[in-house]
Length: 211
Image (cartoon, rainbow, N blue to C red; front, side, top):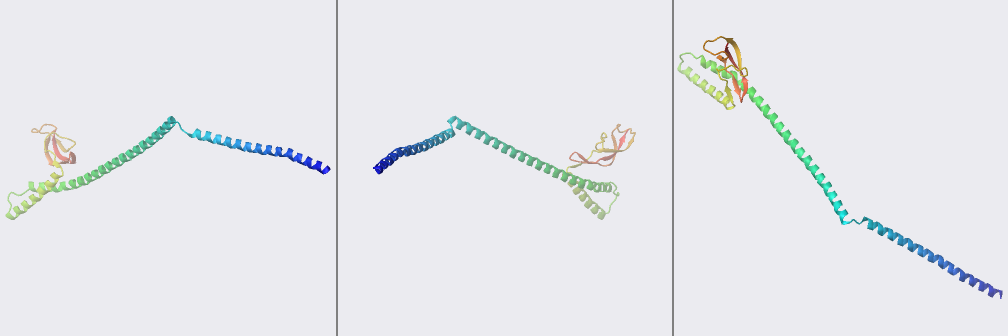
């Protein structure tokens, strides 16, 4: 009989314990379900927070377009500056080269002027009579003189006027003397001709000037 009582008490205890364990399990399941639901809600809210409205999309695209246009404008400006610097450098180099060529040409022309002077002086002091052979030699020298004069003329070299008013820019006065035939401040005679090349004086003319 005691065994029956003990068995009855044990069954009652198990009956009482079973509902308690089921309650705990149910609470755990509910808690996990709530946690999952909460996480899902948070994730959905986060996803919904990243979705742009049409106005926001337009504003973002306009900002990106403005930034791209600014970068393009800056690149074009740099390119134009580089091209301008290149053009300026090229023009400067061309100008320096041309100036160097002009100076070299001018030095050569100046070196040829004494040769022209010698020809002119020789032709001015020819004897009154010449033999046939001497005349032939003279004709040959005249041809050489004419070729040399042609080269100078082709390079733009011209002789300074041997008369007229004295100009200190192209004349060098050897003497100042009174003259009844020439007006004061004008050239009486040219002792050595002067030459200019493209409006640049290669050599001033040596002149006598009337007081």
